[in-house]
Image (cartoon, rainbow, N blue to C red; front, side):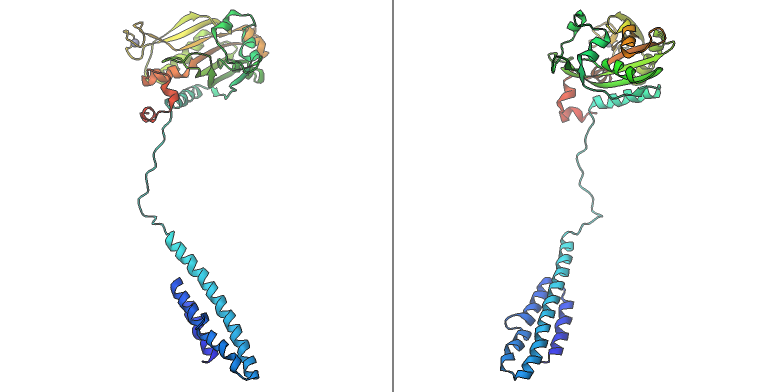
Length: 334
Ligand SMILES: [Zn+2]
């Protein structure tokens, strides 16, 4: 057979192969043990010297050329067949992924932050590990102060502890910033409490602080009444009950009229018609001095909410521990 014709038909057929099976057949047809080209190469030894050299050279070149062409085509068809296998119908309806849910505590915290931001307060992040100084001493709890017994503390070393409240950030923030200021500082706190329906060893507080020249209890009442109104979506009655904290003077606790019974008395408010919501007071001169402010020049109020209590009131949840268990049956309801 004429080698030139053989070359033409081989290349044409190989280039035209439509799939890998077809290509393999062509490879056998031309290069296999009984293939057309192999046949010619085998006959070389019977040829005259001059003819053998001339045809041999051309036949060997042709063999390489066909081999190269087959390899190239194999890659091309292999790629196409993998594309075929991986083909995606982009018009097909998707699989529905299970949807996640936000913990109600997260929902309420976001709402709290939104309300205070709209009242001109900044939201400040703060540290969970504290020194004894910031957690107690700077807030007017001296080493032997009996008020320290009010809180059971997780100590990490003699001087380092897990903060028992968010109040240390009052001093930390005032040390770094000049008045006037308005901030809230939400965060996790830790106490060695046995856990029950209303207590857990880990809980969130939202600390608030406002300092300016002429701040009075009236400013506190106005801010906090507006906050409750927006959080619960209705007017609530409020009263301030005298209380005691080492770092505020005077100290008081704001109560709101029970959101469940509107003040007529129910199980949740223990028939009093009132709900305790927070600890608060006017910033103690000692705390201003700790932070380097002049107590003669500046006045301020501070407050601390238990965030979980707000969550439980807002969503009528009766066990604080539900907020920490991650039970989907619970979380799916929000
Ligand atoms: Zn009630």
